[in-house]
Length: 179
Image 1 (spheres, one colour):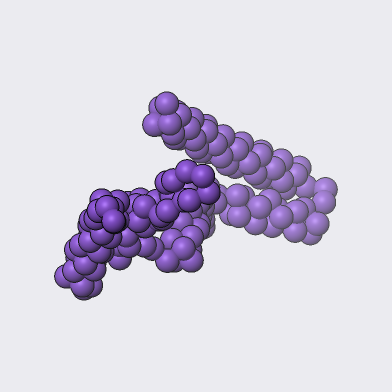
Image 2 (cartoon, helix red, strand yellow):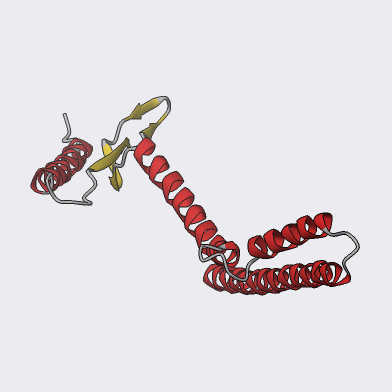
């Protein structure tokens, strides 16, 4: 009866796989409280059998590698929430100038004040419809209101152009990073 050296090779592979498994387990235990550490696992598979004439024999185990184990749900949720946060931050940044354009907290010089003056002048005109000076006041208030709308439009167009420029810069950065 001859010595079958393939058995020694199978044993050597098994010991090597077990040693790596113990090392990875030790690493996992040592880092159990380390923030950001992901548990690792050893990926093993059966080696391809060898032999001829329908006498195939196994050759042991193959180490495919060490992989970090992360909860798929947690990773997926993290990616989703990060994307949502980024979208909301971009939306907030884009709308802040629009909010500032419409902010009329002090009540002076904005569309709201112009509209109030315009409609109040109509109240005066209703009380005195034949008065030329009152009619001129209504026309003046209408012109002031139109100027307020034009000013608001100019601020919104400026905001749009600024936002468009920011979007172009971001797209260029993404395209350069992906190249």
